[in-house]
Image (tube, rainbow, N blue to C red; front, side):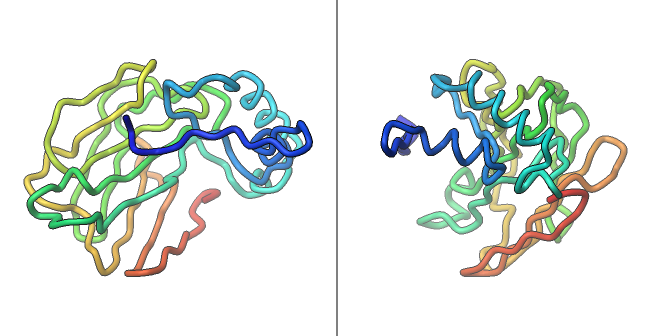
Length: 186
């Protein structure tokens, strides 16, 4: 239905997904309805974070820009909802998203409405128009309500700010490449 595969990878009876989270090599990213191993993986992430293993030496949170699709197949102008940015809650507590802001390099601005984002869960922000879906039992999908594309195909910068204006995360990309700028633990 979502045009993706959900996998739990095992090798010699050991779940590789869990091993990566436990070692601090990955963070939990839940996209409902895939919740089969949620409690176990969240606990492993809590332990890795507390021990400051791997990515937890510098990753602070509470949120992380995990992916950005700036140049989907087809004409961005005719279907701006092909563009998206995904934001994940990487801390151990629920985050009230009210007042967080995403901007691009050219002044486009989206302010998140009030909804709770559970640990490990993500919100998908599509560039075009639609009705927001904030049911925590499903993938949270939000709409920028733009008539055209937001993200420049040749490069742009996505910046996520907390309600107080501080930078939480920043993701820069150029056509064919993506770079991450470290801002408070990104």
